Length: 61
Image (cartoon, rainbow, N blue to C red):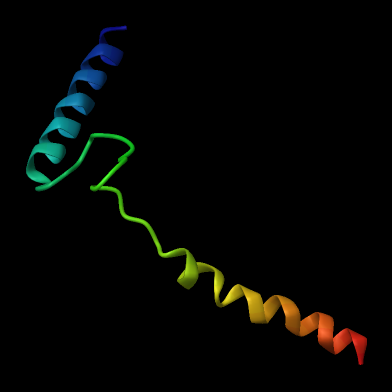
């Protein structure tokens, strides 16, 4: 049982060390508002529209 406790303590110490030396790590969770980044909807939907209509026109010929 004591080996599990020692292993957990070593793992937690290693995780804290890696997180503290990692630089700018954001552990804040989901972002909403100005700090959230979004892909413009026009850029995301434009490539899908021609590809979806191409098989339908080829099948009708």
